[in-house]
Image (cartoon, rainbow, N blue to C red):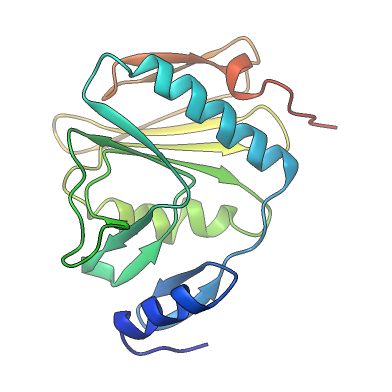
Length: 185
């Protein structure tokens, strides 16, 4: 479905029972999440909130919209982490501009877009420092961290006893906490 303006998109979002992303004038309905997807998101929110509680980082769930002006994109990342206070799109209190860390839990229908276009869009955000992709079908974590030189360093792990280290958040989350009560069968 095509909607030409962000205000039209907001009107649609406020009157429908489902959420959609906005892709430069095109409305993209979001698919429903699975049990594994939901458990991973909840596990991460708990672990990240505890790990970052004494720092100036704040964890937000997938109900908070992100506006990416350069690409005219509204998205709903699974988890956003913002350092200090959120910066909002003008006139909004439900749409942020400044995440420093973004998590996406991959599904068969979203993994290509999460790895490709969305990562390109996210990199245009000045505060953005880390991108973490979590597979919901097996223990597999992909992490991209921005270096001081502005390059992106890639790490991945399939180790169930491994640890995710957030460089910009200065914290560690054991993989077993991320996958707790997740059924990979």
